[in-house]
Amino acid sequence: MRVITLQEPWASLIGENIKVIETRSWPCHQYGELYIHAGKSVIPKNDSRKNTLARLLQGPLHYGTIFAKCTLSDCIEITEEYAKKIQEENPTCYLCGDFTP
Image (cartoon, rainbow, N blue to C red):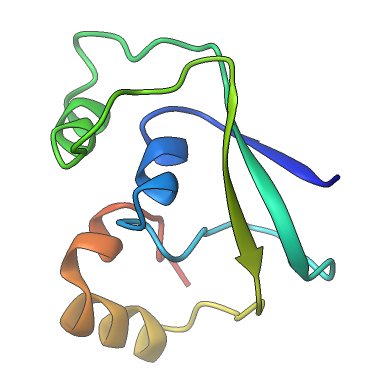
């Protein structure tokens, strides 16, 4: 079983299919099924970005648990054009990631 740990609220955003693109600064070459583990770090009350994203959720945050399964299907380098495309086509997903080229 392959598992990726993400901080909240990003883990739950993936679990609720709001965040469909996980942005990283390094390429990943392990495709297929993977489980989402929400880290134990609690969102600080003064973190406005994380709290704004958490308000997009319908359900609870999942601190410290493996709670969802997803499929890693591709790894794409972020370019200015790709970032603009995501921002236009899925602005909510764009808010959930770091689309810096």
